[in-house]
Image 1: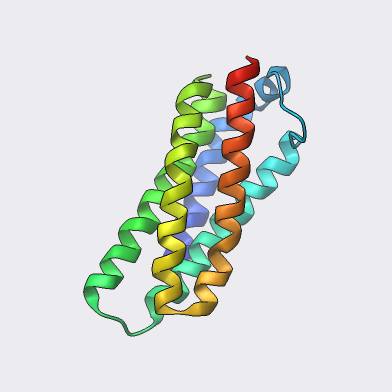
Image 2: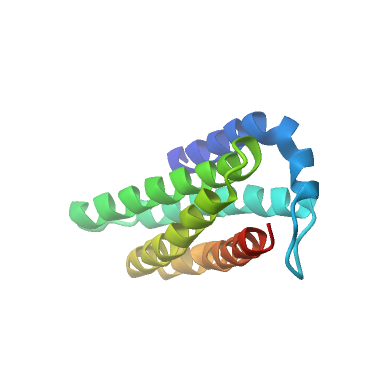
Length: 148
């Protein structure tokens, strides 16, 4: 419950920081298959929801405290990077730094999925869309950086 509340609070905080800068997204040079802003915002909302629920499921399983600490650190890292990524892109207009954050988010998500799946297979499966969305973010930001 706590992980889901933290993820949703992060999402709401990000929306408050980025909302008035959302129009800037339309002026970026986009690669093929670039999602419109509303679909990308929906993806972020689902990402934070799945991150909170999946991590909460993995932490609810009785596992060694060292593994719980690793899952919690990976969760906080993914949460922080997923918060900073849209802020860097839209509010601060730094697409290259946003791409670097997306490149860091991809392996961090894979480590979190692996650690959560060791604790609870259902949690790992629930977190798998994070990896797909992180890969799409990396593709989108790489295209923006190369075209812009």
